[in-house]
Every structure is written in structure tokens, then in C-alpha cells.
Image 1 (cartoon, rainbow, N blue to C red):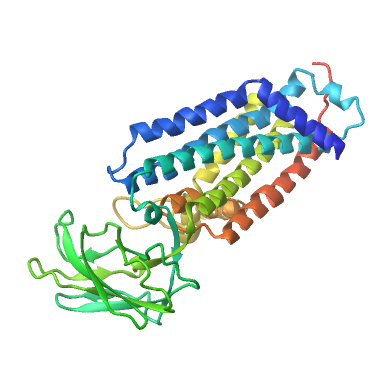
Image 2: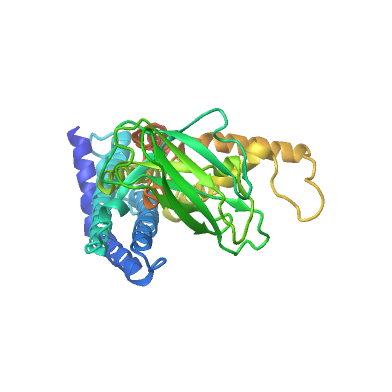
Length: 414
């Protein structure tokens, strides 16, 4: 244990002395503050908060991912190339201890930088909403309520003068200081998709009086309606109804099974949700550090960095890979039908299935989108990310890296 502590401490000291830590420290400061000053969103406080949470956290993730991969590759490959690693190997130190110590050092560095970045985001969000009376509403975290009924996700067609409704179960405790929010997407029969359409939503808690809100929105665009604060207090169910009362421009509204209304119930604050998002990002950086160190045990620094970044590119195309595995279609031609799958296509499809099976645990929850939209990041998702990325996959890479490290001739004369 003392050996691991010493190696991890030396790794942290090396990163700090190389001025990389200070460079990343100021790049995080300039990037997050620069996003606040240059991107205004839609001009509303909610838009500014979305920009800070979505784009600033994406900037932090991208910057630290690149720095982690390059540093991890250079920690092993660089020391082998300049022959400084021989001074460590002459001592009674196993190579698996060197791998693990360097990985633990990178975990500490990344944790410190993530805490600094999250503190910047949280402080700027509080500063942006310092004079806003709806600060508590904008920073509330919500989770989806469960729809009730067998036809909850069925196609709904609402003709002029008609109405339809959905029933939701209120999840556990009621929060009286934050309002439930309805998220919806409607389609209309109006051929002019860029034209605003009008409808009326009605909220009724169990045993309470109905409250109506008239809204306007574009066809196919996501919209949100906030229910009154505290209307679900003491209720176990809530009914949401939509009424097509647009008499000036009568149209038919359609709610598809994929775009059913979602009732978001208050479930916490920004502080806890931001902390869970940081844990997920830390787990991803732990996996990237393990990947870089393992590849660096076998290849030179530039080649190891190229291979590591190639693996990240594969992860970036995980959505396309899942689509190919599910549909068996690599592309959709502009003219004609889908081409038949030949022997070569079948082999490539099998390769895609294997890749999808390997990367599936690495492409779970997206904390950036959930955090920016005010949706709760479930604790189970955080545990799953830490378990798979920072434990299982890191352990597999540790075993592979230790074996590759032991097979490599460190003291060979070039």
C-alpha cells in the first residue's frame, strides 16, 4: 500500500510540475466564464442556465478527456522512451503496482479538476440568478412520473372541440416549494409547420379543482408547461388533460406513442444533481486513464495516443452502431429500397454486434443532457457508471496492461 501511495503521489507531483495542472486550471476558468459571456441562449434566465450546465460541462468533459488520454499515454510510454522508468524497476516494485499507482494518481488529479470546474459552474449559475425571483423553480430537479392506464402510450388524435387525458402517479413525497412541469410535443394537421398553434392543458390533482393553462407552440417542437406550486400536496394521482379549443384556426392535434406528455415531479436541487453528474464524468475519465496507460505500456507515445483517441471515436459513434445492430441497415439510399445484405455485410454486421456488446456499458446515461434539462440523474445510473467504467473495465485494462508491461523489454538497448 505504501508503494501505491508513493507512486500515485509522484504521479500527481509530476503532473503539477509539468505545468499541465495549472494550464488546465486556467483553461477551465477561461472556458466556463467565456461561455457565459459569449453565448446568451434565448435571452431568458432559463436559457442562460441551460447554456452553463450543458455547454460548460461539455467543455470540461472534452478538455479533461483529451488531457487525461494524452497524459496517461505519456506516463508509461514517455518514461520508457527516456529510460527514467528503469530507476523505478531496479527497486522491489512490481509492474502492476506501477500501473495502478499511476492510474490512482490520475484519478486524484481529475477529481480535483472536476471539483474546480463544478464549483465554477455552480457559482456562475448562482450569480446569474442572483436577482431572479424564480431561482428556486429554475434550479429544481425533476423526475418522470409514472403514467397510469393500459392506453397511456397509445396514439392520441384530438379533433377540434375534443379532449383527451392522461393519469400520472405522484412519486412519493410532494415538494410544495417547486412546481410540477409537463413536457409535451404535439403534431398538428396544419401544413404550415412554422405556424404557431394553440391548445389548452388542464391539471387536476386527486380531490382538487382543475386548473387550465392555454399555450402556443410550433408543431413538433418540445414545450413545457408549469403547473401551480403545491397542487400535488397530499395527492397520490394527478390527471393532465389536453383540450383542442382553437376556434380561430381549427386543426387536429396528434400525440404519437413516442412523444407522449411527460409529467416531471420535483425531486431535489441542482447541488445533488450536479454532484451525481460529476461522479459519472469522473468514472469516464477513470476509464480513459486506464485505457491510455494500458496502450502506453505497449506502444510509443504518439502511436498510443492515436490508438486511444481512435477508441474514443468508436465510442462517439455508439448511436450509429446501435442503430445498425438493431435494424441491420448501414445506410438508407436516397432512391430505391434498402439493399439486401450480402455475405460481406453479414460479417460486418456481426462485427458491429460484437463492438456494440463491448461498448454498451460505456454508453449509458448522458449526464450533460439530464442536468441541463433539470431531470434527475438516478443514483442507480451513477452506481452503474462507476461500477462498469471505474471498476470492471478499469480492472480488465489493468490486467491487460500489467501483462503487456511485464512482456516488454524496458532495459533493451536501441
